[in-house]
Length: 262
Ligand code: NDP
Image 1 (cartoon, protein in one colour):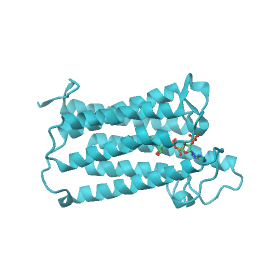
Image 2: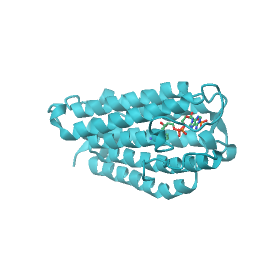
Image 3: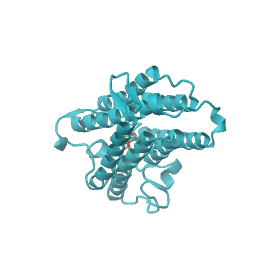
């Protein structure tokens, strides 16, 4: 049996690694019905019922920084530099989480807003698990691939989907952040895919990590796509309901997250 030595000094067999990842996926599936009923109280639902609160921007930083740091650690310690797919996957992750940990919190216009510490800690735990599994797989378990990137149709499809999702997410996050330009409250967002759905930024994020799963074709990358769906679809349904209740003339044809479907 092959054992891999992790730089964090964890020694684990590939089959054990796969069982841990499957259990992680099972947890997402179990949580899904609960998230459809309970909306985590951050953002527009923020309140102190989940215990002590922490500054919103700081919370985003501490939630997301583990993902950035852990992947950098694996990128530094891998010997898989021949595998261009692995290198690109690492770089995509680093770009995404550099934005999410450092730039996104600075762009938010939520000055005095707070988030429950419990949400920050659960977000950080998710990111540690997610980056730990994906980083370990990319660094030590990815099958060899020495060919050119453009020789792999799966890579081309995956990177196209990833890039499309990333742009959709960024574009619509930017529209939402700009709605707070004059430090006012919530408005009905318009432009881009808001014509069709209430949460195109979530749609973009789901597309993005589905593309990543196609690029990597690994169990951990699949788990990330599933977790993103499980986290964001219930939240999009809550946002959609909230918009319809708050704004009398909210566009009736708008769906929550998937145009014309849901
Ligand atoms: P939201 O869409 O709820 O909010 C994004 C920002 O825009 C917040 O600052 C919010 O303010 C503001 N905003 C939203 N709607 C309006 C409006 N109608 N009028 C004025 N301001 C508005 O996104 P989240 O905060 O839930 O998520 C942020 C990013 O993180 C997204 O890109 C999302 O895809 C990603 N994410 C990814 C997850 C994953 O599992 N991969 C999980 C969670 C988030 P306020 O906070 O005050 O509501």
